Image (cartoon, rainbow, N blue to C red; front, top):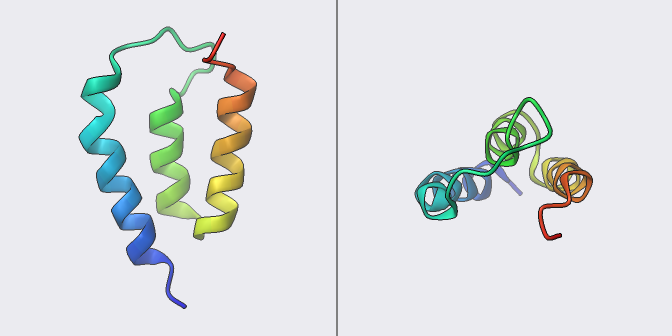
Length: 63
């Protein structure tokens, strides 16, 4: 199964909702959105999602 259409859909979704999330002060040099976009462009879907989840959990934006 070709996963690139799913990646493209997620990339477009992230680009569309990014302005609604506002600007946060990130503790990483690359924001989670920028990191997610890069991972979705460079990796297959499952490894990209794992990497994005690790980054978001390490950032801990929910507390």
